[in-house]
Image (cartoon, rainbow, N blue to C red):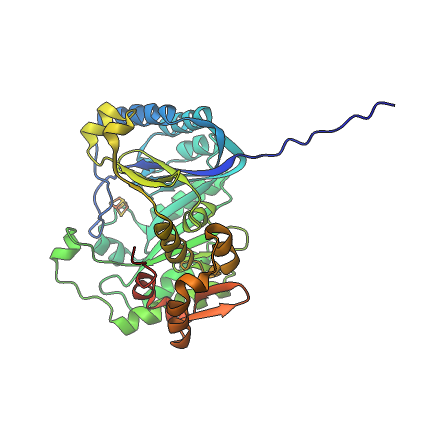
Length: 387
Ligand code: SF4
């Protein structure tokens, strides 16, 4: 009797994430230093053409499988539903998109419509990230946001109606004039709407922004500390767990794209100024719109700051990106990645911060303590290695 051997075809492709940058906004917010700004229809059309050309030119079908796509900005929702569909079509043609890929689009209230959301859902975008920042009109005005809370509610309703069952809401705390009470009100109001995910970042005053030139009355350090602690506590009551310094999710709705970024999954950034981590190198696209529009298919002309990562660079990134996640970093994973024990490289730093009660060691994981999260930046800087 002839034996038939079944061959199982294993997926041997390397996971890849894609980031697509849309650098357009209706108006610049007071605190914003992102690469974004107002645009006219012609520039948007030309940009989408250039973006599609770039996507086609960096096609990676053979050895990579795209596990997540993040269309960010700027405000991607200033593009029409047709333009967003076209971008997704190009991605599908140029890359092997995994069947269960998480595909997120950022959208701002005041720039979305039900028809556009339906088209996006049809184009297999399955996660919407809504930039709300605050539910209080006075705070929205202070930030220079273009929308009202009512417009946010409308966008949320349209997203649900279009079939989105994975919605993130971005919130911001430590806004000028904000009290702990007002922040609690913001959190409770949004949590009651039952989104799947909430990102809560504290306001950072960035150089060169209108806020940096103003005399602002900001919450005190103690108030900011309290707001941060209240965030985790209030959201826990509504069924969210904190999985990263600033991110909270219901079970199973952690943002896979961001987790991949913190775990150093390779990613390609397309569009103006978009950053990449690919085949051992980090690089960014030009932030010059003219150059991008004319040469988006020519890596030589649009890629800048190309850095080949050394073994030390990779270890540093492993530590300071991985420690952002509340589960922390695995010492076994460190050993698998780098062929040496984490104690041999970082033993003294880890012990120092463990003794100060800023880091804790549980099982195979190292992670921040609650106290440590509040001083995470200087601690993370200590993981830089002298080459
Ligand atoms: S909507 Fe976002 S990207 Fe646009 S200006 Fe405001 S903060 Fe910046």
